[in-house]
Image 1 (tube, rainbow, N blue to C red):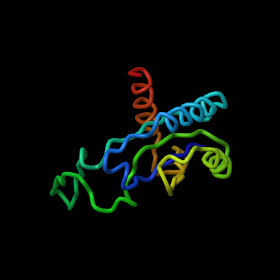
Image 2: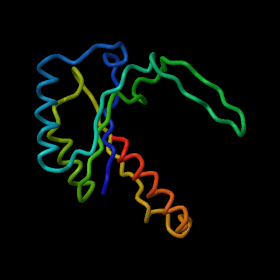
Image 3: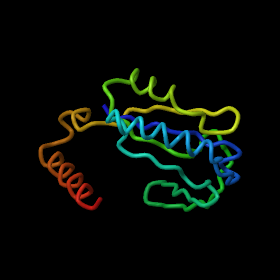
Image 4: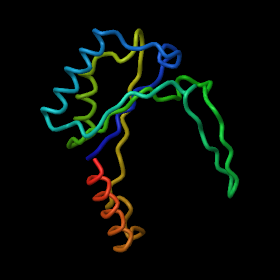
Amino acid sequence: MRFMVIVKASQASEAGVMPSEELLAAMGRYNEELVAAGVLLAGEGLHPSAKGARVRFSGEQRQVIAGPFAETKELIAGYWLFQVESLEEAVEWVKRCPNPMPGESEIEIRQLFEAEDFGAELTPELREQEERIREQIARQQ
């Protein structure tokens, strides 16, 4: 099972406050543990929403909205992709994570869809297309 582990933004991360050397070192050690255990597939921090944009869809209409975005608690400051056996295992790994923000913070864990989750709607042709795309991405890395 794959899970996206989402580090929620804080006022500090949205203000562009960079993590301390101590936090960077602790996160580095944590990431090394994840890699050694075969859990970590990817992970990155994100710039504040002031450097981003949103595209709102309404039928055929597209509206671009420049950051920053007001609701800090709804924003993402970074993420990991884990491959583990269960949600419970993902939770246990996250509980070992250093606190990613000064003060209080929150990390959300969400399971990624796998091809079999889509049932008959994912036809053999669509499944082949998905596999080709994944292979192309892997070759580019």
